[in-house]
Length: 221
Image (tube, rainbow, N blue to C red; front, side, top):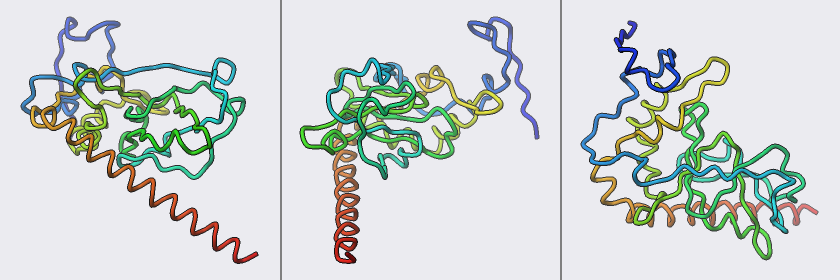
């Protein structure tokens, strides 16, 4: 069954968008909240290219397939900055990346500190421009928002807010307008600590698995 929504011209906002997805009531997350996401995080867009990147060492490049269920999972090594290809977003440890494309794939992840220590002397990390990069404001740790962003209500709202035909995406304004439940906000820093412990365990397990594979390959000659 279709959904019928009535809006006045004054309700359309800047640019008078007529995309029906913009006014889908399923975009709303009905929770008790005194603040929205825009009040506790910034969406940063520090774009870099192979030419503008000033990192002297290697760079780990993340695309949307490397973010899943809260963690970064990759199968490749850092590369020289010259191999970066298209423009990317620079990220920092503690940032949270969320893909604006195909939210049903749950491509949300904490950028954990271990990602910056894959090479001797360290390495930089950059991500696809398909990611929104969330960075916590003073007093709020963005890492603690990962479970909230992966919750069914939020995922449903982002899915309902996809706009466009060929590669539908949700917009930054929808993301930042999400209401953050009071309970989530109160526990955000504690949750962030839990997320970091889980990320460290995931990273340790993946590295141990790679070591086992390398050992078997060596034994096979």
